Length: 125
Image (cartoon, rainbow, N blue to C red; front, side, top):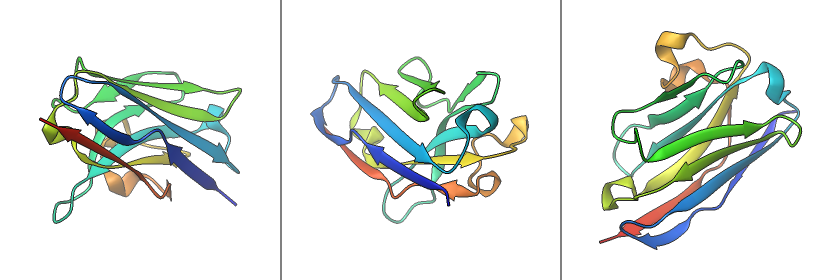
């Protein structure tokens, strides 16, 4: 059974940093495509960053240069380092995993089977 658990969310002021973590069980990190999504109430869940099995990364334009996605295969943990945070980054952040994701849709929710419960990030101005 696959189980993803996010942590590291919190409240920060604009310009600050947070590091999110996603610990996994029941899914081999080495053979999975992984991603971070985010969602605010009333809006669709959107992709923020993704990393494939080779380590190739994809970022949404809104986070490029500020967020860094990485993974530790030995620890089966996914990370999202978020720097220079803005109020518009406020959202619930979810990690996702799947055994295959097309490169063209790495930031699309429909390509991921497994999801965590989310961790809240709030950025104040």
